[in-house]
Each structure stands twice: as C-alpha cells, then as structure tokens.
Length: 159
Picture 1 (cartoon, rainbow, N blue to C red):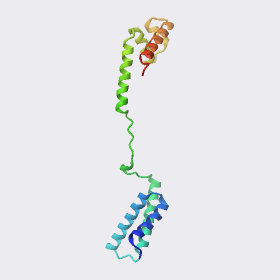
Picture 2 (picture 1 turned 120 degrees about the vertical axis):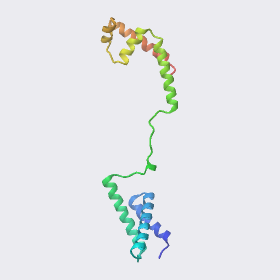
Picture 3 (picture 1 turned 45 degrees about the vertical axis):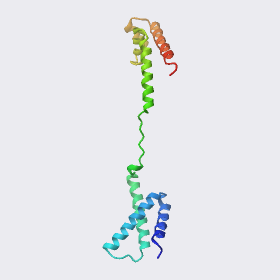
Picture 4 (picture 1 turned 45 degrees about the horizontal axis):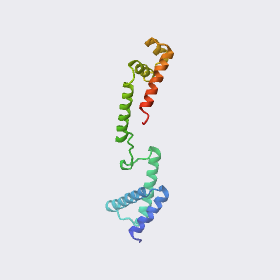
C-alpha cells in the first residue's frame, strides 16, 4: 500500500481537477478521512482504504456541487470582504471645511440675494415663483441668482 501522504495528494489532485479550489479539495480529503476512520471504528475494517477515500471524497464533491447549484454557494465569513462606504476621515474634514466656506460665502450676501438663491437651488422654485413671492421681476431674480452664483464661485475658487 502507498503512504498516506501520497494517497492524500492523489485524491487532492483528483478533486482539484473537478472543482479548481485547493481549499475545497483539502476540506473534502479531510472529511473523507474522518468518514474512513469512523467507518473502521464503528462498522468494520475497510479492505481498500485508498479506494474508499477516493470514492468518498468524490461523492462529497458531487454533493457539495449539487448543494451549491441548488442553494447558491455558501461563503465563510472570513472570506467576505466588507466594503466601508463611509467617507474617510480626511474626506469628512475637507467636506466640513468646504461647507463652512460655502456658508461664509452665503453669509456675505445680502439677505434677499441669499433667500432668492436658496429658494431656487434648494427649494427648486422657478424664477417666476420667486419673483411673485418677492415682488420682483423675473429679470431681477435672474440677477440675484447670478450675483449669488458669482459670489460662491469666487469664494470657493481654491476648493
């Protein structure tokens, strides 16, 4: 009879051709070995342990493939890579600085220009709606929004 390491390697190679996964092949060889040991301990000695291991390992591989096909592949928690979608601390700091700068730019505008700009950009109001609320012409609303946009553009220039 061959040595156990040589038998295990032969079975591993056979399983690798079937699945392509070294880890999966190793797990199946170990499971087959445990079944051989249990069978010999509880039932009776096996006449051809190499053939028993090979047939058991191949059957286990078939069962695993059927299970993965019908239920989807199960993934060990250690193999799962979790992606953290949260921004990095640097991005958070830069975002806060950018927001602070934008707030200072808005704070430097006249109240009416700021209100008109925010009504259009944040609230989604049309120029006509703003003009009606403020008692202005559409042209005046356009000028306030242009003034606000220019002020923000200049204030945020280096950002």
